[in-house]
Image (spheres, rainbow, N blue to C red):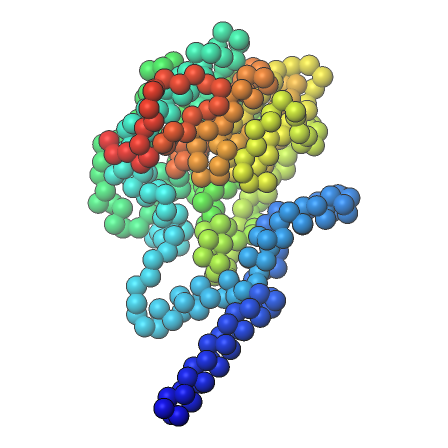
Length: 388
C-alpha cells in the first residue's frame, strides 16, 4: 500500500506539473509565433484608434502567439514524419510546389466531381430575383466568380488530378443558369488561364495581383465599359517578396517557401475608404466592413459585392471611370457563408452597377441562407450540401 501511495504521489506531481506548464504556456510567447496582429494598423492613426483595435483583437493575438499554438502543430508534424505515419492537412502540393486548399470540398468542386445542383440553382435564382427588382431602377448586374486555384492552375495540379474527367462543374452550371436568366456574366477561368504563370500565390488561396487586374479588366468589358480598364503594363510591377499565405497560416507552420507577388502601382484618384450609413450590414470579420471610396462629385455609383479576392484592390481601380463613388460590401454575413447579405442595404445604396464577385468555393447557397429583404422563392430551405 505504501508503494502504491508513493506512485500516486509521483503521478500527482507529474499531473500537477503538466497542468502548471500548460497554464504557464499562456504567459510565454511561442518561439515559432510571428508576434504580429492579424489586423494591421496604419502609422498615421491616432493612438486611441490603435488602442481600440488592439483591445478588440487581443484574444486572437493571444491565440496566435501564446500557448505554443504555433509550435505544437509543427512538433506533431515532425513526429509523424519520423514515425512514417500519414497525416491529414488542409492543403496539398502540386507538381511544381504550388499549394492548393483541400477543404470545403474545393478539389472536387473544381474537378466537377461535386455538383450541388440545388444549391447552385438557388444561387442563380437569387441573382435572377435581384436583377428582376433592380433592373427597372436602372441597375446593371455583372457576375464574375473568382475561380479556385484548382480551376486555373491546372498544369500545376498533382498527377492524380489528370484521371478526373467530369462533364460539368458548379461554375459551368452557374454561368449557364445566369445566362438563361439574362444576367450578365464573365467566365474568369479562361481569362486567367490565358495569362502566364504564376496566376495564384504559391502559399495562399488567393490570386496574385496581376490576376486581380486581368480579372477586373474582363469585368469592365462585360459591363459594357471597356474604357474603364486599367493598363497592366502601368499598374502591375515586378515580383517582390510577400508575406506567407493563408495556406501556411492554416497549419501555424513557419514559411518553408518564399512567397512573391506583383507590386501594384495604383493611381491615387480615389479618396480613403469611409463608412457609409446606408451600408449597415457588416460581415462577422472586422476586416470586411462595408466601405465607400469617393471619386468625383458626379457620376455613376458602383457596388462590388465580393470577399477577400476583391476587397483591397478592385475599389481602387476605377481611375479611368467616370464614377462618383465605389462601394464594397461582403457578399455574406459570415466569412465562409453565403447568400445571407442585406438586400435592403443594396436597394438603399441604389448603385448603377453591381459587380457580384463571390469566390468559387463559397458561391452556392446553402441551407436557409437568403438575402435579407429579397423576396423568397421557396417555402422551405434547400438542405445543406445537398447532393445533385
